[in-house]
Length: 140
Length: 368
Image (cartoon, rainbow over all chains, first blue to last red; front, side):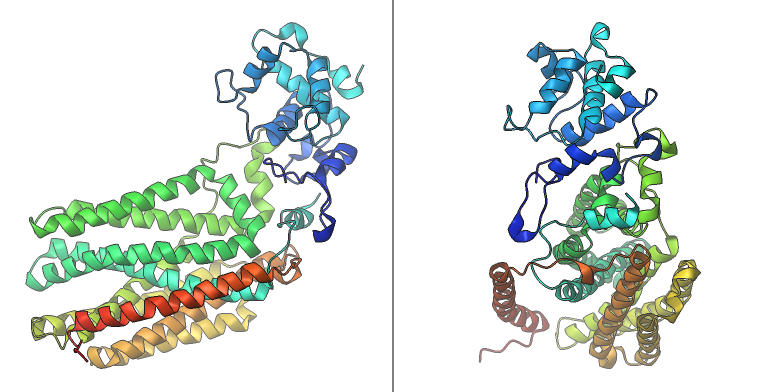
């Protein structure tokens, strides 16, 4: 189990199934009770709020959302140099593989783009890199 | 995903390391021991503070004795809280975890409140050695803090019984997530009182035991011990009468559709409570003689009430189709053997010093 309480891998001897695989396929929002009803389906109105929920569920166990916080997420994004939502979504796809010390992102494609949109929105002076709702919903 | 499935998903994916009914039995037993010492702390500090401000030779002497013993009882209450807390986390983990997460700030504050209460009580006990008239404020502070700790833990326990409300509390209004943990969402005064009023029943019985225990000591004044025993019996009897009323107050607050009134464990608990009241009526005339039987009867009554409390929890959670008996079990014989081995060894090791300390304090230790 990852530190964010998501089950990382199958463990056949104890009858345990990976949640990462399930959440990536079926989506996190549909499989988590603690999601407000209005947020269970991503739309153009709620995508940033859902992105915040996805970011908190996946990342807040280690990262703070404040610019000057401990292990600050916006701070690390600025350090990384890729502040666009597209780059962040691509990065989220590979965490857990390219960054072995981080849990794999537990969510499907749309949820990943919503999280990337939220992450881009908390980086200071990053208005130009913010995506459209259409990109979050369709990837285009 | 609905709440019933969520509760199943929140269980430990590894399952239980031993059969759930064993954890349940141990939880009820260790909780009874824990709440007994909590009762002795609350009642002990309250009567010590009252005696301090009322004044008079006997009151002051009893106040000092109760303040001293309250520090030890608080240590024991804390140590004995670990076991039932761990058992709750094993078989009722989804409920306790969510309740503590929703009110995380208060869970942390609880630790601070207990620590400060402990310190205040130590000041009240130690500083009055040199200045008997002072430091009463610290006694009051200790009492208030211990009370606050009780309110927090009672609220966390009640919140754990309300899975149907969790999402409303967490997603306030459906638009914002409440992740601050600074709110307590539910508190039942009737239930809390039912845990606090017995503080005076058990402290009263403790005072009867105190009189019985020190009776053989030549340095203890017989008139003082008579007064302590009789006062204790009177306090316990009045508190037991109040407890009957409070018990029904709590019972009426339990939702009628749970049909808890028909639960046999409830009536076993009630019968034991009433039996204790009868015992206290009889014991008030001969406190020394009835001290030991009343201690035993009170503990059996606490066990009965603790069992009824567990039956109530099962009734509440049964609505959500949650039963600890359905929890997956992956028996781990190694950790089970280690637990029982150290448990039995601990009892054997501690039995001898307790026996010596008991005889030494009573003045009945002989060289043989």
